[in-house]
Length: 293
Length: 270
Image (cartoon, rainbow over all chains, first blue to last red; front, side, top):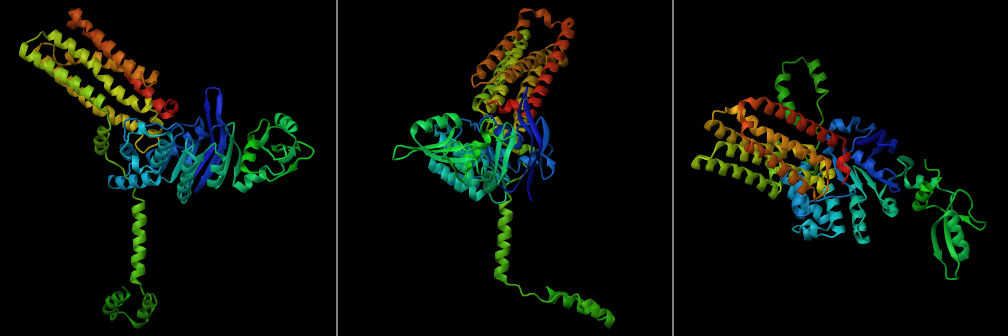
């Protein structure tokens, strides 16, 4: 069984520790990474993709350090970087062909594989178009398609749904849910709903360390009793929001405001505890002075 | 299968004592009925699984070179070819019109100094367009692709330099090694300078800077034409020293670039 292990992995840029002695073992399944900007998600994924060398610690694929595995590791890998580059004068087809060659896809399979992936990502109609003429969403879909060219055993997707419209996001979710079987998928996103619907396990990263990790159920349990809801007049809602920060606010027909708050203690006298959702857990783990790290 | 085995064994068993034969027969497998339809289905599934896992293979070095050439930008390969053509035209002029050797050596040096820019422009494409991070994660990573491109362009450089050296050495008393030193100095120095520009700057407009550096190097290479005495044998030691220093500078530059690639930080700064 495939296993990818982070063994006390750290990455330091000058004085800043971006990833700090992170330990985790990935086995087949979909793993969702959540965290604020600058939490270290992208750096972690870059290290897992073998693009960036850790300052300390090592990443092991089936007990072998990935740097030592070299091409044998990269053969198993599909990667979509956050900032996804392309040669603007390449057509979609040529771009896919080029990457298929870099990924060592056997020549006799290249055509069929490209056709299949362009079909899956809804890009068949633009295969002869130059990439510079495509919309942002189409370019992102092209990025997703290229990451699957070599049928990777380890798939690393950094913010794959950013720039996609809701319909495209649903299409991506459906594609990924069928891909999750028999491979390791590491997925980072700011869109909590995407992670919630796709990931078998969720990792919340804060300041380069794992704040929380586990299945959705386990993650939700970590914020049990920390999420409150109350219905208050607008003025009080404003002051509560300023004081403790609201997870959501909803204006009711009677003019009052239903406010949802993530807080260690009861934020208002009439606040009642409610079941947390992933967004609440994310807020709880990443809030100032939260129990995260 | 079992039937065949029994038949085969039958003849041999006739010579085996009865007790021993009975012991042997204990191990004969019972006949298992095989459903041909199901067998075909299962074999089909195995074949499918094998097909599915055939997405990867290891291309040979020749395949890598052949395919990478297809993706080299037209501008870069065209520029390199133009340099080669220019040198051939010079050679023709030198042969037919009997131009002065010094003019050929000087202009050839300038062309040799300029040739390197096209390789650098080609190498910097992947970084300038933010492709390096993705390419680095592929089976053939940036380092290997750069190696393939360097070999392709290097072959053209060697062809140009060798033909120049042969022509000049054949028509003068300079000798092959001396001419080689005169031509290698501007070539290596210019490449070192361009590698410096390549590693220090990063933007899609860096190409202009790269070309300006190459033009400057070419201009400097024309200097000995103004001072013909520099090509005298007494100055050869200085030329060799400059060549060694330039080679060390270039070697260090290449090692530094490789180290940066290995660490990956420069790749990720798109």
